Image 1 (cartoon, each protein chain N blue to C red):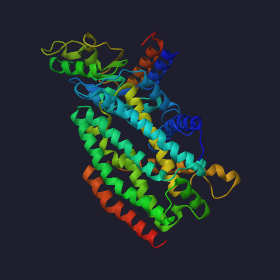
Image 2: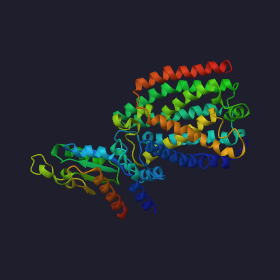
Image 3: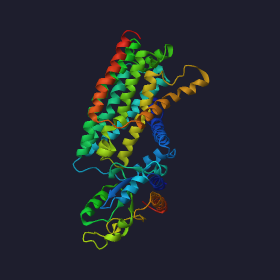
Image 4: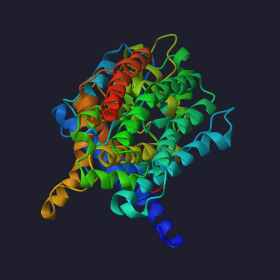
Length: 145
Length: 315
């Protein structure tokens, strides 16, 4: 029962931390749009966390290059588990048009476990809300955290 | 003043102490978020959102930063929680049973209020994070800024009531005469105490020590998991306690001027106070620490001293 409570509470209160891993900034601007009153993600309990130590949902944007990879790993290590990771935009999912770039470090899920993929270049805030809803459904289905 | 040990523990832990204050405090944070949301034309979080947040934080890992003394870093929030529980108990017991107060509980309340910033400063400076230390130093400056006007505001009502130092006696005085808020000196004291409490809670014009956008939560930066939950709970309980404090000292407690059904209206006084706090919070930008110091040491201090002078001549 305690685990059920823990899971239910986590699914209803995901605090967002946002990492820009060498993006072109479009996904980041869409994330900022997502957090505006127009989309009101606080309905689902989503809040912007000031520090990775308060966060539950990590949004990673951009093609992860070799220089920024270390920072992404460090931020991921600083998030108290259990947490949810979302790859936002085509770059974070696959590398998109930077696949053949000399400093491309591979798609994000090669380095940290990714729970949700939010496609698009950039994804609309609506798409991100859908992704978060999927993350919540996934959390609810999980047997153990 | 005959209380058995069992009753003292009941008062402290269940009603009106820890349990009652934490539940009402968390509901207050919901009111805060909901009113904020409505002011921005959005729907806002569901009623149980603060409880979800609290239980979620309880279920997460906790990091202790390298180089931080474990006992102080993890212990400081617990001391804060305990002091706010005692604070709300003292205030509410005096409010419900004015006869059960002890002499000088007003001084105790002042010291317990001082505990909250002190434990925040302790925890933040022990976390070995330079940004947390910055938050701690700002919290310290802010505390120095609002403490003097707050003392003057309380001195005003003590002088006005003819030197009463018991919360119960102050309440009785307000019930037989009039709430301090309805006199010139008391109104000035209320305004300055109100602004001091806004700073004590760390709400927006004065949230300099937390400042999410510039110093990443400052004093709470290094906290995670259950310890962060304790900090958030302390903040929520302090929220409730502050509204009780202002009601009891300036607005005649929960008692409504008319008896009978109107009694329920008295319970809405603290809610009215927090709605005012939320309105100020949502319509003001954050001040810099030097601006906040100047504000408290010039305008608010002058206001409270003016109130004190008015009280000495009997207005």
